[in-house]
Image 1 (tube, rainbow, N blue to C red):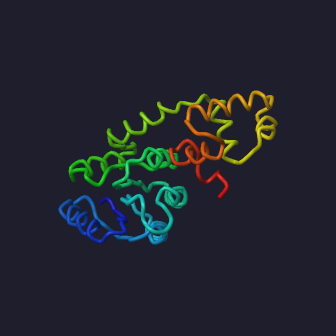
Image 2: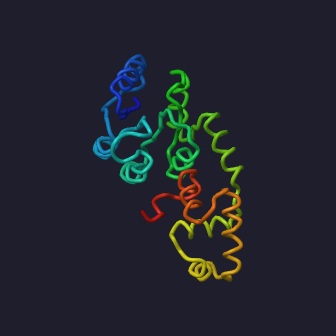
Image 3: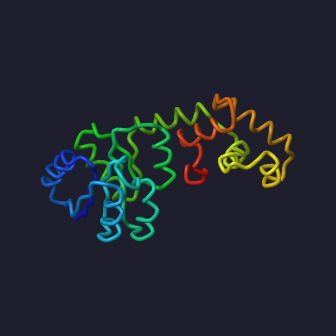
Length: 209
């Protein structure tokens, strides 16, 4: 029996999913949550086999709480069920070890396929979702060194501080910064960092508020 924790801030969505799962003998909804904070609390308490969660609810995001949940319950699998296919969201979900990412207009049989896939230990990202991410990353393809410089920019380091950290000259850093601004089509460092966070090129948790 797959024990499922269901999370969505809309009652009608939870009701609809509950009806679907009631017809499947091998799956059982053990609890529900209507916001991110409640989800995290219940996940740590119940240690479900599977969490099926909306992406954007009040409280902490499932993407941000995933590491805590998996640290407490390594066997728990997590699928995001969302209306948002922004590649920044998708990229952050992948980086934070979300096991599956599917859209809310997905047919029930495909939702079941996603569940079976992640419960077998594999990752399930819908084909359209993967294509969206691949196209976005292809549009802004940074070299490994440019990514290192970009990460440092996200930490608000100066060119000289970046040079000292990466053991290169300040002139080299300036050249990489110029390439980053060109590839992201942004006018300055601040806008480039905001772009990087929004599009999944930078980890927002490492960027000063």
